[in-house]
Length: 335
Ligand code: KG4
Ligand code: ZN
Image (cartoon, rainbow, N blue to C red; front, top):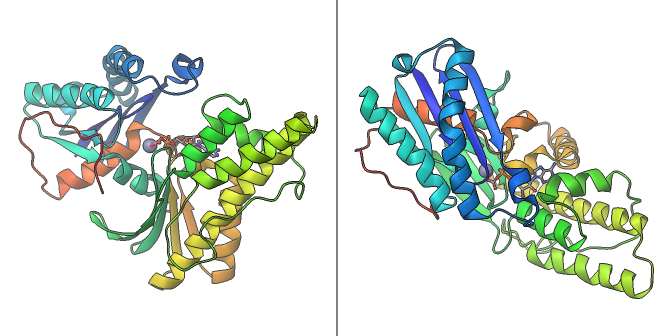
């Protein structure tokens, strides 16, 4: 089964072709980062308009790359939520219209299910069951995964998502959007030990997260530095490192707790923040101690992409999921 996947939930237009027998055939992405950078975050209306502009050329591109035509496609998967409604509607209407014209099925995919299954596209995919840490710009969740569609939420953030904390902290340090990669880059020049930041909610039982206080702690420390005339480039790098370490430690502690609670030794990390090298190293070390293994996607498939939607949609279509022709998307949608 050849499935076309369309991702338009936020600021990347992702298009891919996945074949159930041959695997991923082509994958194309247009990132709108430069379009939104001057505003310090994603402007929804600009995002929707740009998706409209990019979608059809990207579909042509993946078909050409794979040496296929529209008539070869057996199904279309699109991100139906959660995300920016206007942006989601572009992918949804394109998918439904194309599916109607080609007389093939279309399915709406949950964006976080796409992220969750992205490591399945790698050479050594994880076996079920496993614990998944989903860390993106909008979500921080621990999920027990027993199979495709068999997900149980173990814990999530009660306020900011991990990626959101990276982005907001970067902004208050005067760094560019998106903040995750910027903080990670700056942290490499940082010296550990200068700033002390909390590991929120690790001193009590449970698998909930809270990152908004951490961002405020960074702000307070930075203000103190400025008042003391010490807010130089080194201080900024030291603070970026302290912040990254606090997030990484917190996520590692909670992942360990979740694995022990569920008596599992396989951890999958997915979503934009799973591209973070310090997080990967810390989780590798922790899983090494537990005698387990950590799985993640290549960096390109950690952030938003069409391949994960094509894969997740293909699994849903193979399982016989059917939908009518209505175009519906959801800004909020529990998995
Ligand atoms: O999954 P994603 O592309 O979009 C959402 O579904 O939200 O995640 C984007 C988030 C942003 O907050 C970005 O700052 C963060 O992932 N991110 C990172 C890194 N790369 C992307 N955070 C930390 N370290 C990174 N290397
Ligand atoms: Zn995402």
